Amino acid sequence: MDSSDVKAVSREAGDHPALETAARVGYAVNGLLHVMIGVIALQLAWATSKLTADQSGALGALSGNTFGKLALWVAVVGWLGLGLWQVTEAITGSFETPDRVKAAAKAVVYLVLSWTAFGFARGGKGDSGKQSTDFTRWLLGAPLGVWLVGLVGVAVFGVGVYHVVKGWKRKFLADLESDPGDFVEVAGRYGYIAKGIALGVVGGLFVVAAARHRPSEADGLDGALHTLLEAPGGKALLTVVALGLIAYGVYSFGRARHADV
Image (tube, rainbow, N blue to C red; front, side):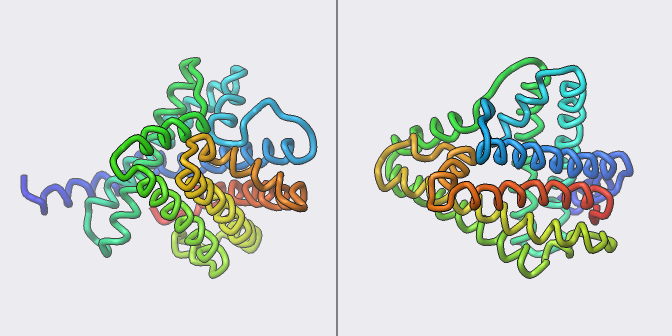
């Protein structure tokens, strides 16, 4: 089978109604995840919360009851479908190389999310912050480790800037095949900007971890949101970002219906 055959098979798979439906479910599940993280972040700002404000905290909260466990199994299927659909987009070669790389990167993210949700659905546990810290510790121990961790931080910061620009200029509308309506568009703009700010702080923490040679500084999204809380006007700042994450979730629900898949 040559490359043209692989692309043809991949294109056919990507256009299959079952995979398209699974991808849309994946976007909806992504919306639920961001809404839950946003709610946890609001609790962090104004009350107390035993949950971490990241994916492990949100998935852990779902695993605590029967309905939540059912939602986790739906998440496994949805993120798996979305990840596989992104794989087909990366293979087909019907667009420019940067977009193919972006599709491949998204495929990895969604497949990892599916695997993580699978672990929680089976009754397991996880800690995204600890995983980030352990990864940073491992990377710091490698040759040129400080530079590698710094590079990761710069890359994540760049992704954050990309989200802010995408939200501000409404470029996310290009991902949709139909008009989602003003409400979803406003939610998407606010959500992308807020998520970009959060990712920018995550990237900054990796840079700090590299500069100080302290893996504990890079503890993921939960650490980034705690950093915002500790800043001047932290409660208000974290509230704005938390509501933005919820808005991103609302946009993701709209994307589940209007996405160009």
